[in-house]
Image (cartoon, rainbow, N blue to C red):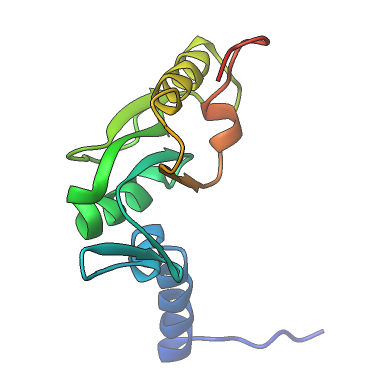
Length: 145
């Protein structure tokens, strides 16, 4: 069997499309806007909100939210695998472990529950979840929300 060989511009274009499609900062940026002092996220209008981002792509997603709606964020946490590069201005970064849960992921789960304990009726919470999120945060059985 003979397989087609791709090269040159077609391969570069394909690779560029794949990388652009997997850029979580760019994808998140396209999903949020501000108009007349209100935040619009995928067609839903909200005011101030909390942010919880978990997983390998959480820095990029959280940064896009900060860049678009910094003044509208009440508080936030981004849980990332240990050693993940990146900086956020308002959303706190917590390093955790991946792929297996450890005490660091239990700590991250506890911090998320602490943050969520501040949420009141009518408040919004924006959850941003990417790959590895389930291992990055855990909670002991019986933890209170």
